[in-house]
Image (cartoon, rainbow, N blue to C red; front, side, top):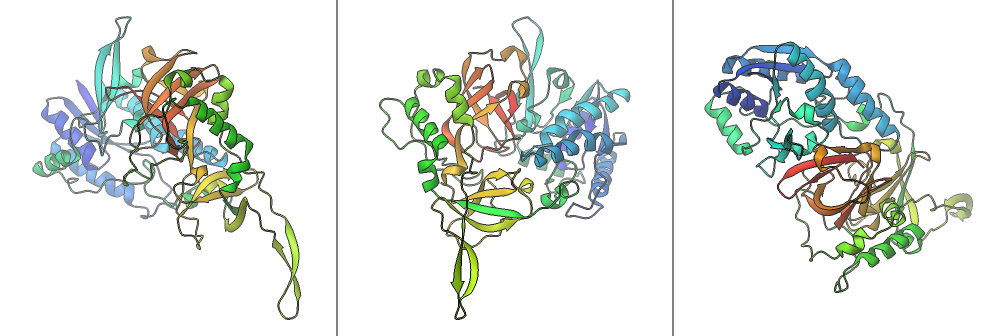
Length: 461
């Protein structure tokens, strides 16, 4: 069998190539360049050239042929242009997921096949297994990598059965430290190379600078939302009412509308036993689910001005009247450059706790923020995936309208898997979490897993 390894210059793909060579396969390496414009990167214009140089040395060390392919045109059209379009709409895309679906296992795969490859291998930390469907046909499963801190199955959540049939993941059963040890023992040039960061094949970038290539900077207001707003907001109160109706009769804790999750590198508070009744979740109406999954809007917060006199000379000045629901606390350079849950880059002081973006209004160029991890606007319990955005890695496990299924879900890379209920309705797939989630973001991918570490499907939030 002839296998093409996508050699990036990093240690993971290097060890993948080495293992396949040791296993006796006919292996060749191919390095793909997907980006030319260095204006937005933080490391100058030689980063990809350095990666190519290391990759070529690795191939020479292993003793396999090395080739170069320029896929920058396809990458710009199918990944970068999509990114710009999504950000312009106030959504936050995941370019790494798109890169795998559109480039590595599509454009790159086709080039490799023209060069005689039967399969394409990458350095992803995930596992692939074969199984048989109810119709007796062969199917492929994607399982989490065995290293819990490096599992990268999330990034492959949009692959099809056809793409999986041509994919190999040689290091999915290894820990990262084992991969490093193998590379050092083999004296590979990439053994001590740091893991890449930033946008797939673009590198570490200043995102606003990157997006400003096509999206204009326009100053607007940053509005802080105060807690009293939620006490009178009709949608939020409706959501709380629906959530109360989902609770078990013996549940005596607080209404579970605030996420305890902070980040993947900070421990979250211990959760109580599951507060909801399965039958009551399954019995939610389509209207209830639409209400639960709708983000709260803050356009009703308006600011009136008043004239006052200041100083000894009583100079007339204008200021905003106090508003119990919010306050204009700063300025920004464009709402499309910010995402839900973002903390950095706001540059607003005078608060005890950090400010987080809780909503962006692209039409009016306003960013809404809230103070602290427990701000109500930062948490949501339910999300919706529209019908056309539902993707089943395992088509034989696809849900029909009316189906209800328990599963585990993550809404961002490296987030611990969250227990949830999937409900398939005519207008989409609803995900109701056992615990409120922090920073649910439109444009990101929700990915669901079964009980045995298998990733079965995904969809755009």
